[in-house]
Amino acid sequence: MKNTTGFDYQALYGDIHNHCNISYTYGSLDDAIKNAALRLDFASITGNASWPDMDEHDPRIHHIVQFHQRGFAKVHNNWDNYLERISKGETAHQIVLFPGYEIHSNEHGDYTIVGLKPSTRMILADSPQELRQRIFKENLEEGYLIFPHHIGYRQGARGVNWNSFENPLTPLVEIASAHGFAEEDLSDRPFLHSMGPQQHQGSMRYELGLGHQFGVIANTDHHSAHPGSYGHGVTGIWASSDRREDVWESLNAKRTWAMTGDLMQLKFAVEISCKDRFVVILVNQEILKSSLPAQLITLNYLRQNKGIVGTCLCFQSVKWRRNSRGRRKQLFGLN
Image (cartoon, rainbow, N blue to C red):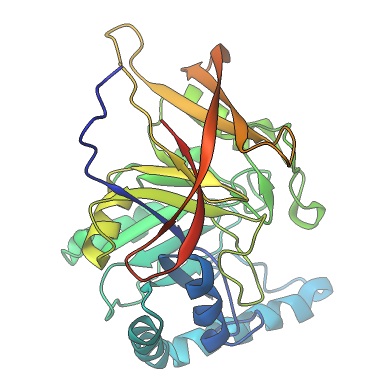
């Protein structure tokens, strides 16, 4: 194990995929910003922007098509106003706010696009590959981050298509949200039925078996202006500071972990040998008794796609701290 003494990062928490009424979902943008600031250090409030392969000619779903099209038009027509309002909200509520939007796809799965700059342009494309090409062609690759979400659904029904997955601009994968958990196909929270079914090929473990390397995140994908709502998804990062640029650097460097409930600190070091070329640590939290001042953490070590190859148990204490903005947070620190 590497020596973690002198660890020069701080734990920050965010939700970079959630929705409000800037497109076709509910709750005001102002409420979304206020709610995010109650619990989070950073957020991106996402506009549903496009669905290139939506079946617009099936009369049975005409009302659904219209519902989506109205939402897409709304976020397009008000994009500049959205950018202005999140910029003001960032100052007023002392939270880092990244612009963000989403592209649906039956063939490729849904992707969230997050922008670094407050002036981020909405760039659209019919596939993740084409989107990356457009961003690189305009020399904007430093300012965009793309990641697939609700990956567990069936491919062809807006579940992930790993043939479309590439690392450039896509260092992260969303493995948990209000839609369900996708570490594996059998989980504590199966995916919602309305876009189902869930499949093993859409799981994180299946993706690891394909040789992909990525960081994991969890977001709420909440549709009612409540970023960071408890129990749905939240992302932890190790960052040099809570400045916008340092949060961005941490996301791209994959110093991330995924949570669904309490805000936890996961500090770990993994010694990687020549034989074991890639190791992922999964963390499952089990509360023993409410009266105990500690919790039990189970660490499962995976090697490629060979399943769990080792497990250890350790206790970790509960402590409080205030971040630079004075917010009091309960942290579960694992060292």
